[in-house]
Length: 109
Image 1: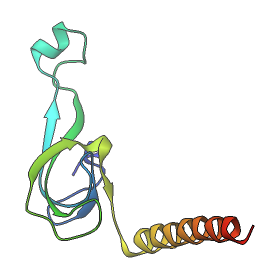
Image 2: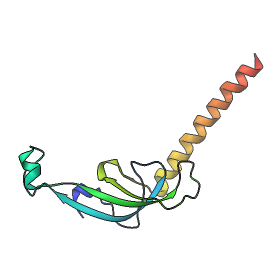
Image 3: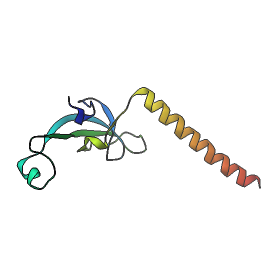
Image 4: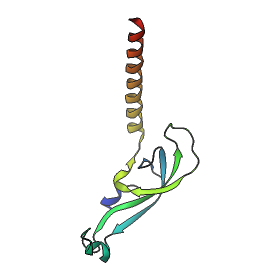
């Protein structure tokens, strides 16, 4: 594990760059190369954000999905846990309730 992989490991459930819910399959640590240093991207052999490989398990509507294998920089990944999912669920329910209330108020006019 590294500070650059956000403590992600294979098996973790995440949100990532692509829509949906994903399961981490691999974490690849990355280091600047000589070419990177020549382009002023970073210092040779200095570690930077890990590359996170994952499979999509639910699509953007939280429905079962065909397995899509892809990867992205760790900066785009957020590890999910029960507490964060309940919080997100409560926020979505509140948004829906407020939206439907606005619609009902319009129909009452």
